[in-house]
Amino acid sequence: MTRYYIIALFMIMIDQWTKWLIVQKMDLHESIPVIDQLFYITSHRNEGAAWGILQGQMIFFYIITIVVVVGIIYYMQKYAKESVLLAISLSVILGGAIGNFIDRLFRKEVVDFLDVMIFSYDFPIFNVADSCLTVGVILFFIATFMDEKRKGKRV
Image (cartoon, rainbow, N blue to C red; front, side, top):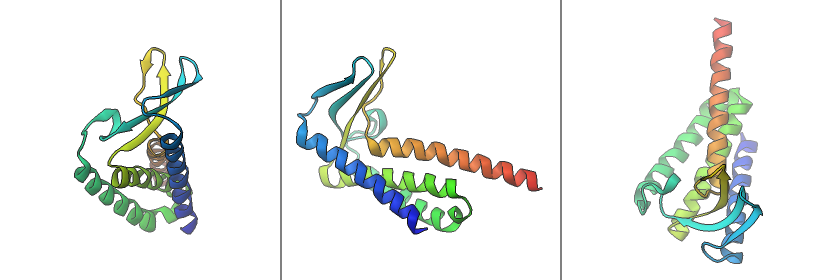
């Protein structure tokens, strides 16, 4: 199981390093085009969750994150030993949750910087931790689906 916690730690390190770079090297709201009309690095801060919901509800986020982190660690210890994909998905989710928690705890806001345009829709600016959460949840559903399918074949 140790290697899966190392994956989570690696995700946290990448997340915090990229956020540190943005804070150190860019002014707030500064935007650098990477692929014009598609992808920008934009220095942004968020005191809420995805799409800016629940702005300023830090105590709520502290509580939820602690519950989620404890739940993930419990789930990893109890169930992830049977599935590499499940363990990886939970590791990535854990890294993402802790990455944004560190921001909320020490900055009182989350540093976002990945700015994507999908056709004419300007997708909400996000960060590495958000990406970890999204990818981790997708992998979790795939692992769960595969496990259920495998169990169904055995019966």
